[in-house]
Image 1 (cartoon, one colour):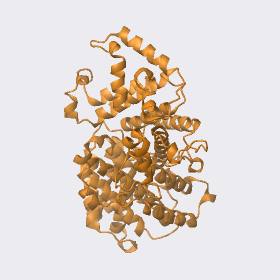
Image 2: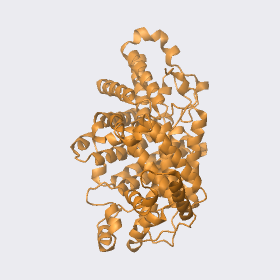
Image 3: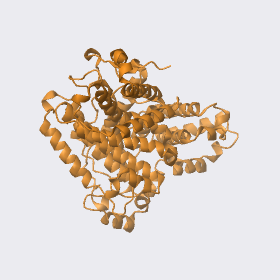
Image 4: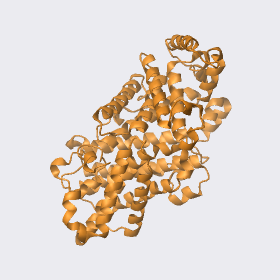
Length: 511
């Protein structure tokens, strides 16, 4: 993005001189429009590829991607620092400035809507992410919810139209001689779109739009951007140093490393979704057990540095690496969580493993908040992290705590109550720390109130016993969550992975 920004001012400096006037900016827009009308066919060499959408080749797609990067830059700024920016003279608060950029991005999409290329797909992907940051992944507002879902399906439609899902046998992507910056960026974009499709589907409980059965795009090479840009002998040497599974052997966590794990995770999530909401004929415990074995074997092949613990994260010196490692670990735990949930609630297995995984997930999310100073550039993503990873694990643990308080003789799992209560208390603090400008703020507030009610009942069961059913009961008829099961009792709704649908959003009154 720095290359696009620098080349934009270097190439079009006469149009961008201060003070700017509308007539000059109109001339610039005409130039960019003419450039955008040219078929986008980027060359394979790195320098040529980067120049194909920058400088005199600047297109509305690249302008939109640049504006999106600026929007995320604003979001990552602490509120107190926003006032020092020139943009604060126009917009009274940070979110209004980001919304103005969002509107400009939408206009860029409108101006290049007839394009069908990887730049357009990248712009759609980044616009979808910004939409969920600003408005949340799931809203009580039906129109907003539909808007996110439409943006999501626009992305999948364009991605499949340009073939991001498939392997072209005419392309030598997997041969060292055919690895280029362009080919690797294409594979990374495919990975990001594929994973996002599963993530949104998992959050809302709707079927994914991009099935793993049609995903044959190769994994990205585990190489750094610098190596791909340099190319030549160094690129061939670095490729030769990858292990037999394609991972780098230096212990580095590149963007490509994360993208590789995203494809692996998304494939498992897609198969899990088939078991949860697919045709009942697809269900079998044998398939669940096979997925467990495959997940363990697959992640065992990932370099040891990716198999992190809370202790190893504390020793990690790189703040950026910590954020990436937490993301990779929690994604893997989410796979285990859903598989154990299937085993216990449909296969009648013990819930012990499910509770153990839920404890680690909650512990990891709480750790992220306690170490928040190390990832302050990603504060705007925290409400999403809570909803996707903290909510399901918290629900299971709250359910088990309530069962221990209500029916202690029927409890078939063991868990350290002090640890769970401690982490749930920290989770409340985390939830109440989320700002009102966050897209999922309302859900976070609601979740905080529910956890408080649970802890109140756990520590004061006698005084709460008479009001239990009126406060948190959920009837079978109102259990709209597609991931819910028929044998839910009065407290099992807490373990629903989708509190944002049906009656759940309206259940707790948020002032």
